[in-house]
Length: 461
Image 1 (tube, rainbow, N blue to C red):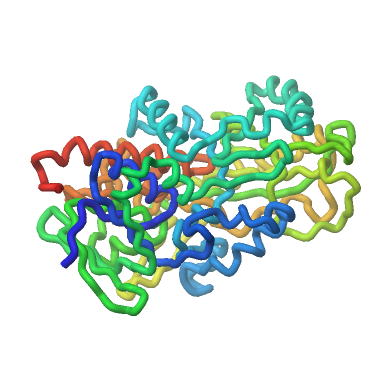
Image 2 (cartoon, helix red, strand yellow; image 1 turned 90 degrees about the horizontal axis):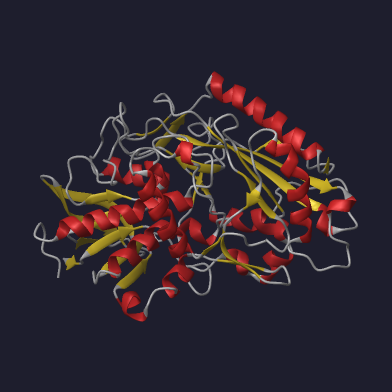
């Protein structure tokens, strides 16, 4: 039986953040990834391919071969947009890299306000987040100016959308991914991290209040056992609860109370006076309207990618801009991801009346703001993407006052001293923003909690 200091299940951004943090403390970390590398170098971003940079609207077709339904169509009918992937680098080789912080009113009491700020800074450093990647966008700054007065009257604001990567003066975009997170670590830290792809964790073996080993199936279908004093599960909001269920770890909250972002997507043509001239090199806009208590949805205004075919040609690419609007649905225990004895999944979901009311207000808000800027491109009018296309959360939530979860506020599974969850599945309350940054902020806190408590409680060489 092979022994390691720490095992991390999942090689996406959260898993690699965990591995780096623990390796920085001198621990030998093995990252187990069920999928294989599909980018070169392994774990680098698919969107850095030249053809995807040149034609951003080819992004959605390009990633389709790597997305697989969670279960059969009948059991997934209520959330048809739910997909999973098995790739070295996880979702981190496919993500859109937008890294806003959760607004203060959305943050729960897992941390004090001071610690939330501290952990966000750490997560932004880990992801190499640029706070204002398109600050020099001629088009973006004109859009910002026009919306400023409109939003100020509603006690809202438009600001720069933080981004994990960099934008060249030419406008070409480089997307960070788990590979970049590793390269940013020192050579000594990287020596302490081993990534094993094609290694699917099937079962957690336990004795009393500890997980003693994991059963892993390799690419040849051989099953081996690996030991480690601590296990961190970073396999996302679907695979993490599935592995817990397969291992007989089934607290009442597992899979129940899930949430996700309903996503309204539209592409517009900006008024001519807002767009940079056709013969001018410009950086595409990347702007963000943060949620507020009165308008609790997250709006991104940017030229990123659009999944549907337009019916209107254009003569100036600088006029193109998408509005992506994210609304986090209510956490209701009736909304659930449940597993049977064969680990097959089934979704149960219905919008609440409050969800429907907020979604109607969101549509009206988007239409109002778009009307200040131009008109919808024909064929690209706003539409809701299939439910759960974006950011499934809450499937293995942490405790909040009055609502028990699967873990404590450090992501440690109840009843276990050495099993930690680091995933957006931990979120116990609605957060409208893209979740990766917040998930990593929580994961780094889990790592530090484990490190602080490991001395004397378990021998780690």
